[in-house]
Amino acid sequence: MSSRGTVGGVLLATAVALGAQACAQVLGLEEAVVIEEAAGGAGVGAGGSVPQCTTPLDCPMDTTCMPATCQASKCGFTAAPEGTVCFAENAGKVCDGKGKCVECTQEVHCPVEWLCDTDANQCVALPCLNGKRDGEESDIDCGGPSCPKCAIAGACQTGDDCASGYCSTKTHKCVETHCDDSTKNADETDVDCGGPSCPKCATDKGCLSGGDCVDGVCGSDPKICLPHTCSDSVKNGSETDVDCGGSCPAGCANGQGCAQPVDCASGFCNATKHVCVATKCEDGLKNGLETDVDCGGGACPLCATGKACSKGADCASTFCNETKHLCVATQCEDGLKNGSETDVDCGGSCPAKCANCKACLVAGDCASG
Image 1 (cartoon, one colour):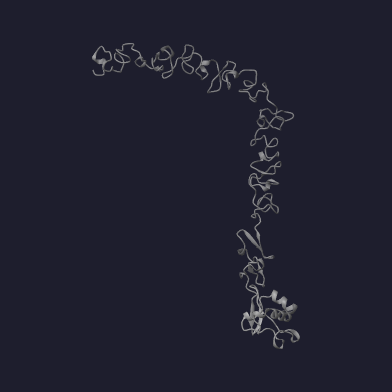
Image 2: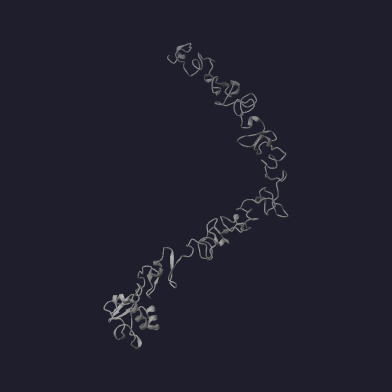
């Protein structure tokens, strides 16, 4: 009988024998289809019979998904089981169980995070994971009714698109809070300002109280933020205290806030406490005739032990060390030979005994005895 070497004649015989109905069976049924004799005896070979076979190799050419069969010495075809690898015939990968090589029949045939469209037998990217903005998404793979909500700065149409719940109506980007969404909402007194959560509102913006306003003044009718003045009984603008200091003509009284001496009626601002004080001896600075910060020099209080001095009169103890220029507790530390000392700061009434070669009056003045 015919072998694969006589393919042309065999195919012609097969086509004549099958007819339109037999072809439909071959393409659509899983069970084996046997090629019958052509009507009227037409065919190839002695007596017009269909090709005879002893093995499927004797039969017409086939495909992986529709392999040839040889049953009762007659050639036929049968569909390969679903999932049979078909070596990319016609760009497919697996057999569909009906004789065709397709891309997929199950999700397992597709890349990770892809689905198999079983109607078209094609792999499709999972919605919201395909790296594109499509469908009802407001941004790439986020937003819309089906996808995860978008992160801050992701594109949005409404707050429902955003993980934060807030979408700026100006930029159409997700924002962190309602204070950034370009809308007057929540507890705001004007767009993105006022209330307990948002920044204070600028002049002419809506308010309920002075706490809603940058300058702390909310008008009564209309309820809008007013610019600061130096007579509004509120510390605002550049004022260092209520209606004084800063750009206001009035200097602040002692005890009121200040940033620099000019803010104070006295002309003195304590540099560390930032309050107005009466004199330079309270301003936290070493200035004027002071020998240390706010002490010594004759006009200011006397300096404590350890503070700088130029003479004993600068010190509360009345003793200033001659070489270190620091106030000390007793004359036995002042670097001078005075009082009952037999030498500088030793002997006599001083607790320190004098070293060798230092002056003494009695053995008790000497460290050596």
